[in-house]
Picture 1: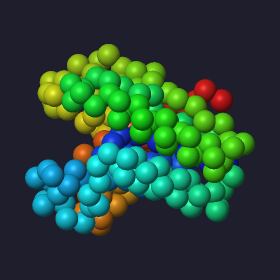
Picture 2 (picture 1 turned 90 degrees about the horizontal axis):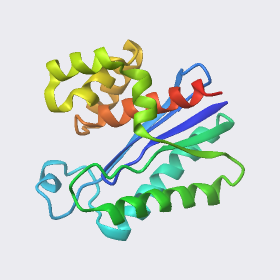
Picture 3 (picture 1 turned 90 degrees about the vertical axis):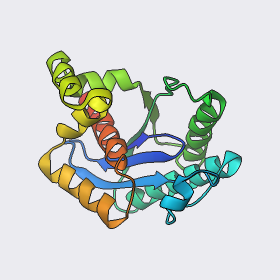
Length: 192
């Protein structure tokens, strides 16, 4: 049995599969760069997509990950982090379009698997209590919530994620996407 967890974003999506004891089964990061950005030159190994190409690419990679896990484990549920419009990027339409397109493509391939949504505040409050948040703010400032969640990862999970990121020459922030995905899944499992 496996739970698929998706920390969905436009440019860096964290994917994890865990069992009902929160043991890591598989993981991946789907990343791309804007082909007119400075990052396109820095991260040459990443595909360059914009607009509808970006949405299609994200959905294909996510569905491929789920199929890979499904080859070895029965999938008991899929959870996608709820849509957040907390940034000031002005990209609300494409963010919600990405969320709905990915959900629709997953439903087409896995019509009998439950798909749920978890708001970030729901799962994060189970990882970081008030004292943890204060300590993280003092230690990491602006990145306190992200770094605080990473700091709570089990050592073996943290080391696996770091090794994967290094080996694949991914951006450092990939650890945030993987950690969020992992803990979102653990939160989902705790509700069973």
